[in-house]
Image (cartoon, rainbow, N blue to C red; front, side):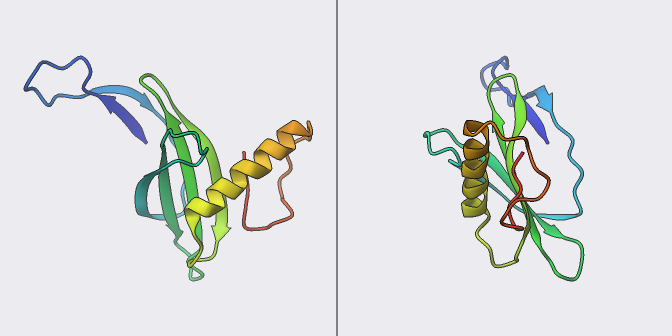
Length: 119
């Protein structure tokens, strides 16, 4: 994932400048990229949906936050069934993360819901 800006470009010039980048391992091909308000605060996150390379064709979805200088992994959901709604799964993962942080719980590798993993 790379973030570019045209902020310092000249008028009429479509040159962009590298701002930030992030590498994540993926197992499959990118199926869709969208903007969605995962946090519910009116700010969009960049959502990337990946279809697993295996025969089960599970989905992986990741939401990335960004601003003028940074790019970061906001939340992700793994092992989603092919017919799942990735945006809803990311919102659910975000809520689980908020509850876990509010309760000062240590991160766990496996959640009660096997289709959702939050960082």
